[in-house]
Image 1 (cartoon, rainbow, N blue to C red):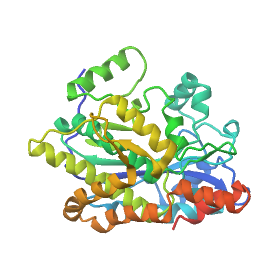
Image 2 (image 1 turned 120 degrees about the vertical axis):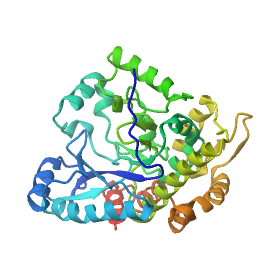
Image 3 (image 1 turned 90 degrees about the vertical axis):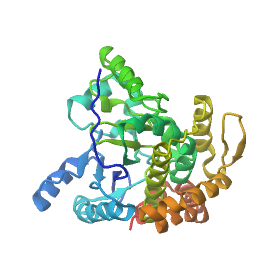
Length: 371
């Protein structure tokens, strides 16, 4: 099976930001996406950058095709400024974290549509648990670069996961994980870590097997944490939990952009890309989800280990020249502010501790952080 890969412009950037809708008083999830979309259409007209999600408690905002981090984040902020007042009129606020700390899955309504209904019919209990939100970053690449980059980005999987981790509390309980979202999402068929194919034809063969056996109906139902996006001509990095501040969004988008462009540059120079064995990648994902910024990660196939934050400092130093060229050096510098301030999972736990476990206060704190 041949999968057409769009010929976009290498290095271009696009961002998808998923939001939950929470009641302004109870702070529980509310299923008001449908009236929100209607109100938006009446006020602003159709907008291809506002999307429905699996459940009616969620919306997705996307940037246009951009050149820089600041351009992409500016697109998103402008859209948030249009959506937020309409949500308020419906009694809701925008909430961006990997999970909601106390919402009940059984109270949520499915967005009508064949693909969502098929997914729910197939996945049942696990599918209905998917009260999770994330950030996806697309970077334009050449087709022959796609699969090597997908595999090599996994070396920095734990860095992105730990920096963005924002889902420590699930169904009213602290899970002791920094990112419970990472553990939940991989339960879906075709989700989780990617297979490390060397070539595009290897990916085509895999996709063909899934289509023939009925696992998927469309290629974009392959929901890997890092995946090719053939229609857009990009590598799509889907590692990050939901992000609640503009500065953190700028930091994580810049880091992802620089990582992918740096790998593409190396391939252009004929350099081989270091790839971790799949068992090390899997362990690193678990460690970052469990311990967040305190994780020790595996660096190479010789099983050397290092504290994640120490390795992050070297990654940022290596990417600084790339960031200057991409016009995002200031945004990349904001990555260092996340450990200083505390990642979202740490901030949420602090609020819970300071309020004797008041999870409404936790939701309040996340909502307030958005702009």
